[in-house]
Length: 144
Image (tube, rainbow, N blue to C red; front, side):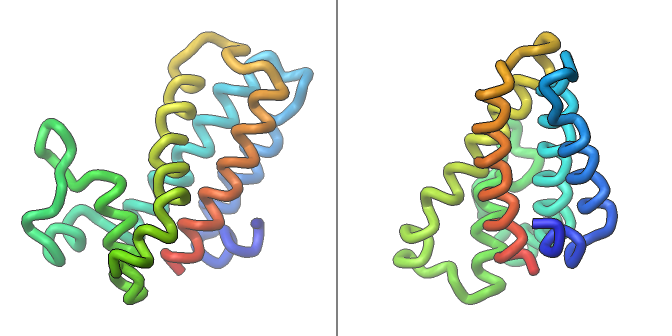
């Protein structure tokens, strides 16, 4: 995990180390600290390797956010897959669970970031951490 993030960016690596530092049962605000860092890692990977401008240049008619201001996260992931030549319907179907995991994680991460301290019990936070690790590995693989 550290190698993948370090290959993408030193800042991403530092954010991950900060997220791991926050993962302590003694930290009453572990969920907020971990989830904020994890959310920013996902956002930075998507924006850094699938900027709005690049995605729109590749597909001006792509799916946009509800307010119409920018391409959706799903569209950005599909753009990254297209750069690898892996945007065929079969391949998209194959990685659909990974895509759904990353998109779903934003809801969980936002919930903890904006929720009360201790929003998630430590066991739930550890489960989210596993999902985050899988999502980061997926994005790092298609972004690198």
